[in-house]
Image (cartoon, rainbow, N blue to C red; front, side, top):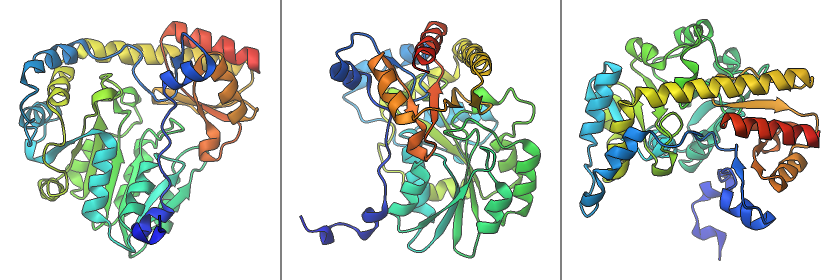
Length: 363
């Protein structure tokens, strides 16, 4: 098939590489049990209140979902002390990021982001004919001074993943406030807080919603996938000014969040117990891993998310394969140019113990 048939932007776009599915690993290695510690999923499973809310919607699956996600937006508005007109829901973070690129980025425009960070930023910008300007991390954290140096007249969007994926590091409040004070109001600042609930206990962690109060050209992205354990039905949201959210409504699509997802998200917002259990389990398992890494003399990045980035000193692709043979799926750092690093999601306490035993055996 002739390449001329496709949009020219596709030639430079690298597809997102998701974590390997459990079913594939079972089939490839003949395993009955596989522990997936690769995609930052919630090891406790879905919020019970989210399940209950979805069950109540099952008899209505013959009906199209509410195109305005009114109940969800009103529940979020009450939770976040915002107006519902400042919120738009989406079919997960990827959908929301594509909406932002469609609304703001045109051919020749630029968007500034870290490298490595969430790959969909660069992908969505490239698809719109824009140029991703990627700023290397400094000491595994965003280099915000270098961001300012790379911003130019064609810059439309700046992406700040906080905590950052794949490193788990945060940009502290003082650094972010200094950066924001020097950033032109004509540029959209997108703060990706997919791991907000895990990071907010840190006293130096800045809330994107506080920045939004004083800077209208700001968007804050959050998701139910991680903390609520409903990654499989895809739902997240953007908070912003009424004007920006209104314009984003033109590119979101019509029935873009299904009935089950809308109901589950409303239910999950009420489930304080599940959120608290998830955060507590994450802290316990991060503590187990960091203590073990210290005892083994392994370098790691202090994480404020539900995963950790660790330097094993060994080839990450080889370890990735060897761990899969033992029934553990992780993410090899080679995907981001860190050839001896692994990104490991937190699991249950037993999963964490078993993983560390397996890794210790391989090292």
